[in-house]
Length: 205
Image (cartoon, rainbow, N blue to C red; front, side, top):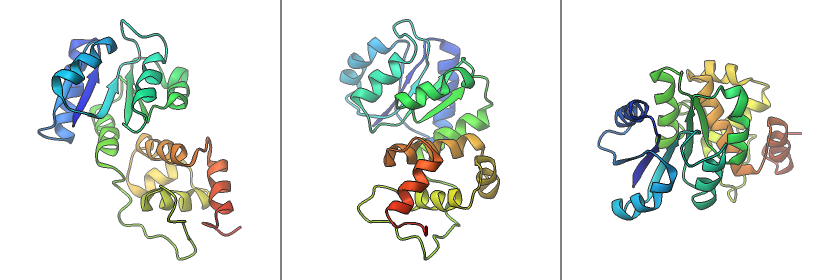
């Protein structure tokens, strides 16, 4: 398995690689400056992708075309967009196209590491919470126990900030968990998620 960092700015690419090695020491990282070099890199490395770190503005991409291309070919591989564009301008488009997270390049190292850790290691930060006995999630669903716990917190009316404070996580990390849960359920909002949960008997009406 390998992590592919697709970023045309050498210093930024080096910084991302450094942070990745802090999260996953000894990991295989393949560095690319443009998306068109990916196929050859995959053949050369002979390592399937574990995570994509993608710059939004590359010499051979336009808008969110890179996100669509990667998610079209590897829908189950986590993808984080790390871009200089303000989140308010393009974050929603990237997430709708399939990105698992969006980080501004101006974010500090701690924030970036937290998101990378969430994508590479999983549902960390939820370990001390227990599901209430009333939550009867169907075994056929692909939700993890952690994501079901997140639904319970949504049902309690907690905001992302509330959840972050309760779990000792950053808001951005909570958003990553939320987006991934939405995608698994085919939902686009908290309201749709809670409706789905109640419809399937996970929560009391």
